[in-house]
Length: 341
Image 1 (cartoon, rainbow, N blue to C red):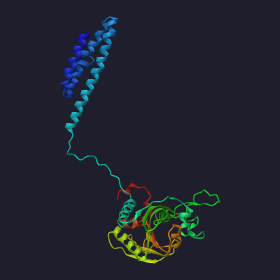
Image 2 (image 1 turned 45 degrees about the vertical axis):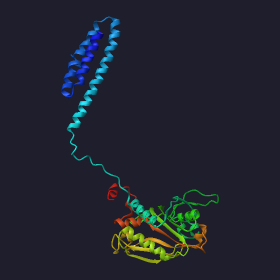
Image 3 (image 1 turned 120 degrees about the horizontal axis):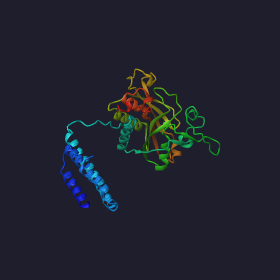
Image 4 (image 1 turned 30 degrees about the horizontal axis):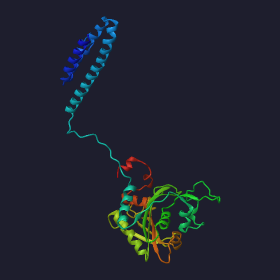
């Protein structure tokens, strides 16, 4: 019986190795492994053996059955895979996969970083949870200044040893300029893009979370002319055209003198719309010459060095570049919005 079993097994394996067609495979499986197949009939014949032969031959028969079933499954898988490959038309277009999209803020920020890097500026970063010292005091913002009011600033509900709230979500990227001066000294060229926070009433042109880019240049004999030249180069580079701008006086505690650089609203072309508050101009860039007190807080002697600083409204710049008329879209997470870029 054992010799007969081994001969039957080898005969099945030899025939199975030559099978290339699924119909022939089915015929062979039925012939040997089907309900009335030769191997099945052989297994039924084991019932007439003695108990000792049943234990010996039976164990071998079960092992052989599992081996043959596995081999049949393996051959079927190969045949079906080859057939599927033959039927596949490689000239047909594949399934379309949606690619990822950079946020417009990321696109413009990358462009600005490349521009300023080409002009010798470092790219710096700073904490979003900022101390009162760096966010206000080191920027020459006195205690009585409106920017410290709770209506403008998100204060963290944690008091210091003096019982004061001294941690804020930074209201501007300007604290990075003081940190940069303390770390690198003068001369210094740096920009610091990042997220900022203010307690604002949200509308088409205002949000509580937005992006700025702080810029700082400190050296000997720096003037407003240097600042204006850099700003115009920035705008012309981003918009790929000459941009209409205006410069007017502005008051900011951390610069003296201070200016505001506005540019013509790209949404309405200067005619007036909700984004520009119907003025035709967008306030983009508060700037000026760094106040001597700020230089001192940064460890730099104002009698030797001067410098300019600006706080570019990065979110508003993006809106103007792409014609986005509602700032709320920027933080919406709406894929329909992002897919446009």
